[in-house]
Image (cartoon, rainbow, N blue to C red; front, side, top):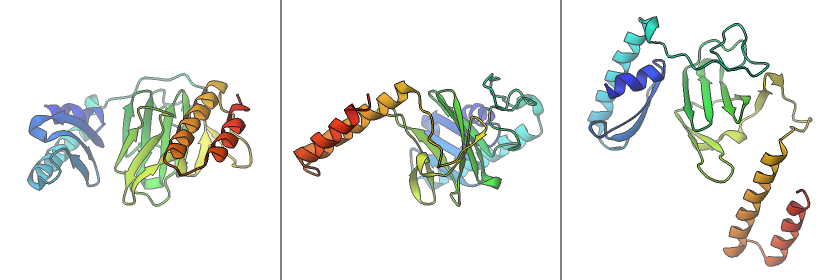
Length: 217
């Protein structure tokens, strides 16, 4: 039942679960990616994989089990399908999910990743990454990362296609709300203080960079 609920919530494309009989916390994604707490229990992985595929096949034949995300009202989002919060023209995602105030939709076939965070939707080019899972940092700037065949990767390293359905050009500065700018500055100051404490940067370098950052407030 835990897996059935998890796969249903992931619309048959993915599942995030937490149950002692399943090795604790784990994640499954259609296409071969599976992680369980009991990471060396390959028999358990195979059993979970088979069960998830069976459930996914059931969901595919039962439209009443499809879990649509709640409608959104942000301008620029898909207006012909109110439940699709990602930009127009992307069709059905390979997998979707959400954590805290962030939700994502991954389109493996066209190498695209849509992330809604703090009310804004950013569309990324995933290049040749084969994404297997997402995580959001719980402190600091709340940055988002994903796992692929190259390990853990920061989402910010991916090329941006559009923001709120508007084409993104690196030559044009992105307008960031003042509150978010302040948060980024304080987070950077904390990192610099840590580097100074470890002896990686000198006191003079720290004070110079600190003055530059505080001047932006």
